[in-house]
Length: 109
Length: 265
Image (tube, rainbow over all chains, first blue to last red; front, side, top):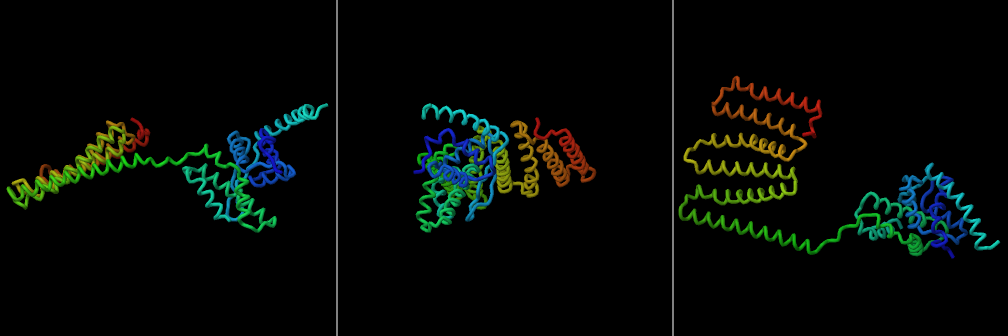
């Protein structure tokens, strides 16, 4: 069953930045990637992704631009900025440390 | 499907002021909905209702972002009622005023007469009423510091006042020299532009120099015509008056542009 919410809370922005680190993308594609890479378990609602986009755009981590979509709709693309890349790298290092600690705390050892 | 999603979003966004940000949010959501619908169709789903429902469901609580946008002010029914009452009151007073004017006109016409002169009563009565409303509007505009409105309203009031003066003088004066009363219309632009300039100075307008320039040009040209028509001054060399005024105007404008006087005190 797809889940999100509590599990992903606090990591949504980092997850999105990770998607954008490999190139510009748009809302639906990012949402689809998360669902696929999360093996169908992890899912983020479109509104949540949008909120993260707005916050990161305001912080200068990403930049938006409009492109053509399907069926007559427009698509808003996002690309990571140098500041966003820097932020993403620092978050990655944080995650390596935190995940190691959490594994130790939850799994024992 | 596009129209169906659009209709859904229009309904959802109806309480928001259509700003650039809210319209972009709507467009982005539409793009996401269309992308998801397309993907589902490509994946073999053919039931449009199922596609529609799943796409909408996956949006999540998109309205939580509405806090960032300006909402349309709800129609205040008491304010509407108040405005209607105020308008009705104004219409009632205007009607009552005109009734009194017509009554005076009829009484004077039947008792004193003559009809050839009493027609002035309803005409001038209506104009005076209008001037009264304009003067009241001038006071409101001045109180609220709507100076541009004030200047326009004062201008119209002065024009109407001169028109009333002209009508009264032309009809009631025992001296029937029409071209003299007609001269009032030549003075009208001078008076209007002069008063406008005074208001511009008092209210510290950004365009005082422009107003001054316009006033000099109008006043000099029309004074030249008035002096010539009335015979107070010969046409030659009085033509020098607008000529000198034009030169002064040009110098004034050049200095204004050169030293960027526009927009300054």
